[in-house]
Image (tube, rainbow, N blue to C red; front, side, top):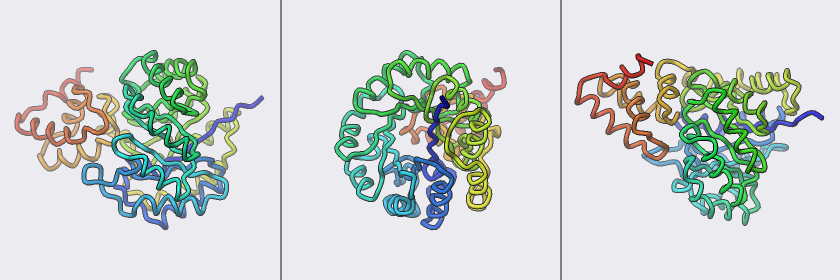
Length: 344
């Protein structure tokens, strides 16, 4: 029997980061229509930091996300629209508003050690009739057994699937295999969301599938935070060649990547030296553009900032550290953190 692998496309959520949260209604219409026609069953649409993320700290949305969600839901004939919610950023009220505008699934994201803060949000998802999916971010930071304990909490709260989220693009294949194996013991389904900061976005995602994950994420043309995500069109091709059923139209997705997404991209995410530093230091991928901006302002190497943030084990929600760390490095006038990377 052929295994079925469900691919969620998150171009319109993770891709919001390099787009500086400036997706337009027309762009959402074109991308959703193409993804729906190509067989993608779940399309994630929100601000890059999830519901309620439009703010001075995370970046203001060009178009209110509820407007984008409503338009996406109106266009998707076969696909369902999903949203991301980070407890403490988004609220149950935000989730209800998204459901009223057509969202049918929610991915509830916490730091990998903080699944306990998501219980009320899973309960709200159940009350709204939404498919609830757990999202354990920065999953490289704890060992597989500890990650499984957190996944077990989410499963107990009602998660239909729990994702291993390599937010920093810091994992290597052995990390992925061990974590998938651990979560399969406690979760109904296991998913994997990978970033390409060390060039392993596709490789780690395929490793997750081989280890037993049944849900994976991609973005058209890899458009996502840091060095981007595994490219949806490439995942579809590799899975097809591997004899796995996704129901995806490989050429339809590659056309969408080339003809719709490429022309609107401000740059092509790629594991350049700064993105590599993210994965090397284990830093949240969304920190990259902020670190570059403040480093350029102060005339310092952004890698120094990223490595120091990794040493301090910075996580999502601690974006204010970027400003502090950049200021401290500029005041010192040295390059000590980056030298650590050169000795690896």
